[in-house]
Image 1: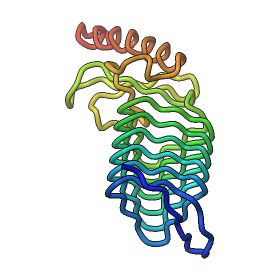
Image 2: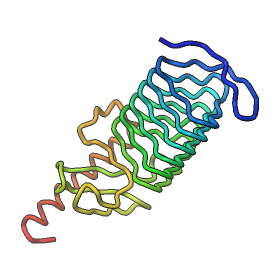
Image 3: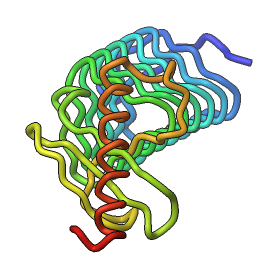
Image 4: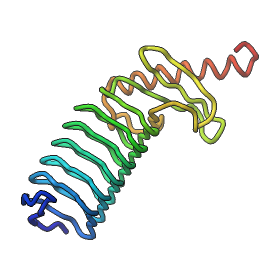
Length: 198
């Protein structure tokens, strides 16, 4: 159940917000007008949320996180220390962003996307990574500056993970097309490695 409330920011300004049950705010949290926080949301210290930000149930924001105006986070999103999201960023459910990740305005990431530490994306077209298989022997691919690169193991340097089993309706069309192209290439590379060609 949500409750309309007035929040007093560290500078003394007051804003109208809507808070769900079990919301926890750290020290020095600054909220913009008309912020909506779902149930069991936890905000760390020195967090700043712009106007009209909406956080789904179970969201966790670590310390020194900054979200621009009109940001939408799905349920159970986790943002590490020092994450910065521009205006109108949209993240699906179960998204995880490592420490010091920066996303530019209008970036959209689908359900279960994960970005590693320190990644910067000016656009959701900048970097796409796909996985073929699962576990420590999965093949990863990522596109950066129109070059496809590959690495073995799920803990490689690839900056963005898009679950190949995700419902395509949860992603923008260009993400779906690039994911399919990457998976096709990944399969060819895996076949070449298995046959000793690569």
